[in-house]
Image (cartoon, rainbow, N blue to C red; front, side, top):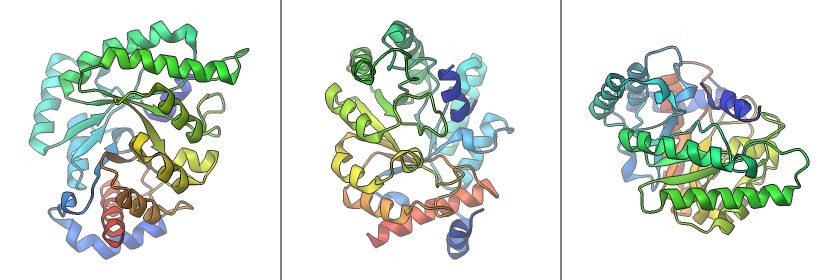
Length: 300
């Protein structure tokens, strides 16, 4: 399952990057540089975007080869046996990888009629998150509900997240509400980052934050950096892909160099995850994307 498929179910290499890869190929070919010495935030990769036909453990190996130590999931574990969990855990430990975020709940928070089902989904997932040592889960708004006003759906998002926060209170779990653009899913409710930040502000809980997906917001409304500056305290995760096509940063119209610089200037200290579809070799593209981040922050 990928996240595009997931959001629809819930409803019912680039030239710029190639130049980065060329400039940094020698240094990145072997052991990666220590990004922790440069970056205030952590880098991750959303697993659905790379090597979907390879076995799970081999996909982790590819991400480690590209220099990343954090991986995001979309419920890949849903049909695992206990042996599958043990193998994944061994491989993760061997590679020094953490599962930092997962997704895949069947219900969202925007429809009050589905609230009990949403909370049941979350309850069922929490023990699995503990088993794989994953501290964050992505929450979707779900679709626009016919006959319901936007004000009512907004309130439902707030109330649903408050109820979910009650479930995770005191646990090492963070809830991350995400925006999706109307071109990818024209039925999805929360297409606006500005509204998303208002929802997080109204929920007012330290374990509830916003997943700022720059790809989706560029398509929806743009003005990416100003919203980031004004709401950095509400951001728990950033997703990275360029427009158009959801390809490598540097392949399209989003100025990711300036975004990375701004994240560093704001001392953002959570996660930034690559969620782009590589147009060439995925390991090379991920290495180049990682080096773009490090080089940009060094210039900040």
